[in-house]
Image 1 (spheres, one colour):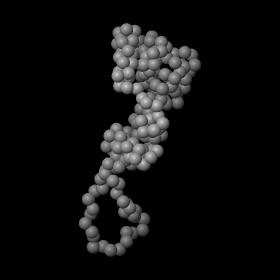
Image 2 (cartoon, helix red, strand yellow; image 1 turned 135 degrees about the vertical axis):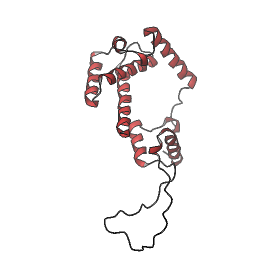
Image 3 (tube, one colour; image 1 turned 180 degrees about the horizontal axis):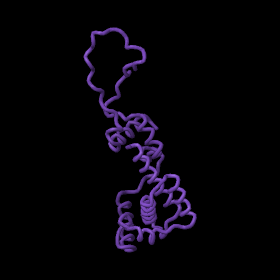
Length: 185
């Protein structure tokens, strides 16, 4: 990635990430003391340089790269052009109409019984979901949320049933959310 692209990514991340993830300006310098002796052994040395105000802390950038891949398509010269907002809007509206026709509400507002009725999985997909629940230590509430998200992804893709790619994408979103919850704690 070119150097200017890195700066663009850093600027975009600074807008998206919480303030705690962005380096804060250095505090004002303390007045000099009359003591000229070096600090006692075992005391930490003063920091070499304060980070620039608004600069991202490296661990935050690395974590973001790991979770999201950070191969930002719009910054690549060889990337295919993305969809226009109008195309995405039409697909979202079509999915909402489908959801309301199927169960009278959007997938996000389905109760447990409606989720069980409208978010059915194939046998191997159910086994995949069970493994995810065990490995991520998810609650029944989280399981149903993953099912609703997978149903929404399938609706956006125009599929009648939830397929393996829809389920794995929904589980991936839950893993990201779970990682953010742990980082905030």
